[in-house]
Length: 338
Image 1 (cartoon, rainbow, N blue to C red):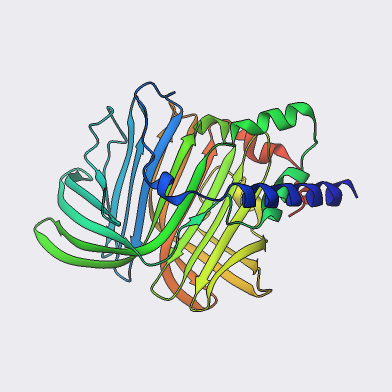
Image 2 (image 1 turned 90 degrees about the vertical axis):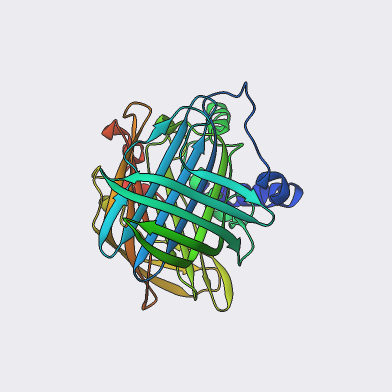
């Protein structure tokens, strides 16, 4: 009874807040760090593009004291990745810059131990941005909150995850890459992700992010566990009819609680139009990143997806706190309402 009442109260409150404070896309696009910013403040740009033969992901996570840097290409069944994860502020080899209505992404250097690459491309949007706060059904955040014991301390600790802005946008990444002397033209479905605000990797218990993209559809499922909120799940699916938001999913938490990458996940997502979307994700190859001296370990994987019978590629990202006693706050999964 208390769970349903709490969920109802929070759904109303979150819906009202979202109406009163809509997503400010122009301001978000031009967010920049200040020189005196807290090192925990992050301004992260991420691009992930996929077709039948090539997958690319790039991330530039700017902080005032360092730049978290990812770049990887999965081409013809082989993974090529940048080995160095952190660079001094302003010295990342990845160039990400807004030009007009698009974003240029470039990298020139060595991947693996000796593979040479020159990558130059531009992202142009084909869909409106989706904000992970205001666009998601209020019931999703309300469900996560209703699962917890409410107190003054609980609402004070929620400030650790409030104030973050996180949105993604679907588009096309067009350009070319020259890998070990072989030049290929690129025109790939792509999702770009921009997030900024406080990001303390050690405050996360564990998380899962699944993203798939093709010309005909795009899928997102995001799960994160914090000390203040054991489970928060959101997601959406875009097809020819438009964008449908996730109301519920039945991902098996037992597969996410082992501290290792599951090689395959299969589950169903119920969308806001009442339809059920069957999802399967299979890992193809991946890179492991370690943040804050190993306090948080993140595995960024290229994956093959089957969405309602259609096959495409995307990302299977999963991360774990270095303290494995923190996964899902050691909650009994059967007692977590979803």
